[in-house]
Amino acid sequence: MKIPWFYFASPSTFYRLAGWMAPWFFVLAALFGAAGLYVGLVLAPTDAQQGEVYRIIFIHVPASWMSMFIYFVMACYGGVSLTFNTRLAAMMARALAPTGAMFTFVALWTGSFWGRPTWGTYWVWDARITSELVLLFLYFGFIALANAFEDPRRGDRAAALLALIGLVNLPIIYFSVVWWNTLHQGASVKLTGSTMQIQMLWGMLLMALSFWMYSIGASLTRVRAVILDRERRTHWVRALAT
Amino acid sequence: MRPHEFYIWMSYGMTALALAVEIVALRLRRARSLRRVEEERDLEAQD
Amino acid sequence: MNVIAARLPAPDSGGSFSAAFSWAFARDMRLAIRHPGETMLVVAFFVLVASLFPLGVGAEPQLLQRIGPGVIWVCALLSAFLSLPAMFASDYADGSLEQMSLSPQPMPGWVAGKIAAHWSASGLPLTLLSPLLGLQYDLAGDTLLALAAALALGTPVLSLLGAACTALTLGARGGGMLLALLALPLFIPVLVFGAGAAEAQASGLSAAPHLSILGAGLIVAAMALPPAVCAAVRIALD
Image 1: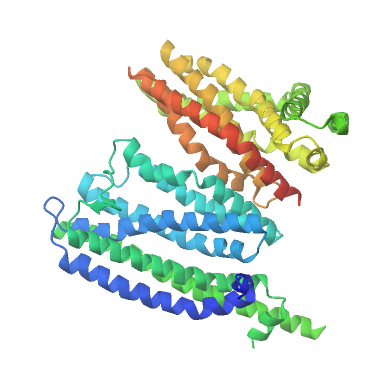
Image 2: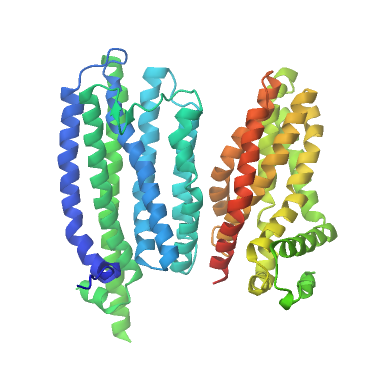
């Protein structure tokens, strides 16, 4: 049987697919979010040292995870678009960037407001925070570069290359807590197990799932708008706007 | 602890705000794209 | 002035990396020597901005010693950044870049040659001048040495990263601001380790770990970035 691998690589077919998928991802995001918030705010006990303020972790850590993961996915789409010279992969990369930037900002903001009561300062230039800030600038640079050209395809390619060059920042963020002894502690969550309290862990994981589902929903929604903009001169788009 | 409520509110509040802003922006963007498609189509129909 | 491009290596000479490298390096160095304005501006900017800080924060020796390595590094970084557009601008404008990309010479070769020449005309003078500025900040001898070594290892990385960003933004709207948004975040790790090397030396620790990381970064950048710059130039020329 000939499997039509590339059926959805066309903007027109993907537009419809994304259209019916996106709402479901938002529903999942809401469900996981509700569960995560319940576990995190109601079930998880008060921390012995930090009191209630540690509950910011249920936003801060999932948002940080998403900020890095979305960048990675964005760079992968960029790589695919450069390798196969496709339009849709580049459009997906563009669609992911604003959501990634938002989560990076949320990670920095929540980290800042967790840091003040717990470690005494809103900001410190430790390796992880600094590289997360660099990540935010990389997102801004990606968005700016993609939109800096008359020809959107040129913008696609340049931004894709930039995303790939900036990939080197992700290991720096991830391993910075291993390489330097600064404010951020070492990894408490590994694939083999965790040293945290079980409710705290589950709260974080559920919120991470929620943010992940939300990111997919948001980027699918955004890519539909990007497709409409790019393909606005085609028959099928013209037929849509009636 | 009472004094820490401010920090929790600022964090969760900003997150909720960021998500809300993004969703609103998405809706606005979709509306703008559709409007742009209509305008161009109407312009060309005039030719 | 770009008539030098007419003397491209013979098309049937096959082309090796080193031939392309030395051709591009010689060409750009010749251009830089004949038009030293660019290098002079880089150096003048470096000295000028480094002189602004003591005037702004007060000339207390202890304070200057403390901030010296970092300030000198930031000034060097900004000077290197300001010299970036010139790397490809005139060649892009008059079509030489397109001609060079059509030649059978391996592209990473002549791109690396251009970057090396750019560094020789910007980063190298900054490195050589840094001890003098360090004296203005009352830095000790071993700190000056660590600072110069860090700049010697770090400024080529800045040229390499800057080349990639410059090539990406050729012909883009937003000009210098866009280049700043792309290049400066990528410069940050170099700055952290470069200034850290001199500061470590100044506080009695060894600068060796920082310099090792800078060296490693230079090797990785020198291997990985020329092909990336080639890809960016090809994107720009399409």
